[in-house]
Length: 121
Image (cartoon, rainbow, N blue to C red; front, side, top):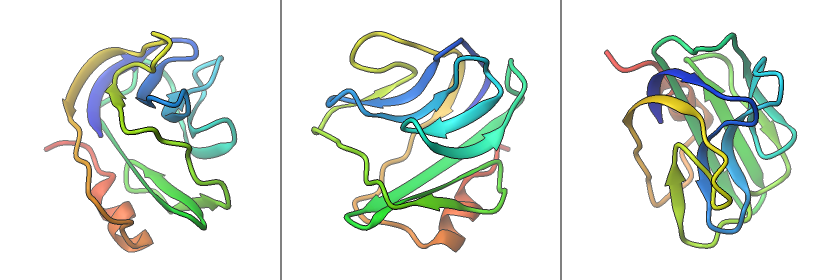
């Protein structure tokens, strides 16, 4: 996902139909998270032009914010087919401009995740 000017306490950048938040801001808007625990990067809103890439399989998930080193955990997101850009199923949203969302049907390598998490240029 690529965007800019994103902000919102508990803002959801990418949500899933199951209610699992794939990419979100924490309450104080100081970190971008995947789910409740995987920190992808420290931020200050509104976010400058930025990129976030997240990949997962049955063994867990990995993600990167703005080309930083990949962070991983052993929790795979619970997805139910629907993906929401800029909000989640419950309507929690992150205001701002979304430049792109790309979904691949496979789990990318950590090197590819880091390379794809750069801001739009």
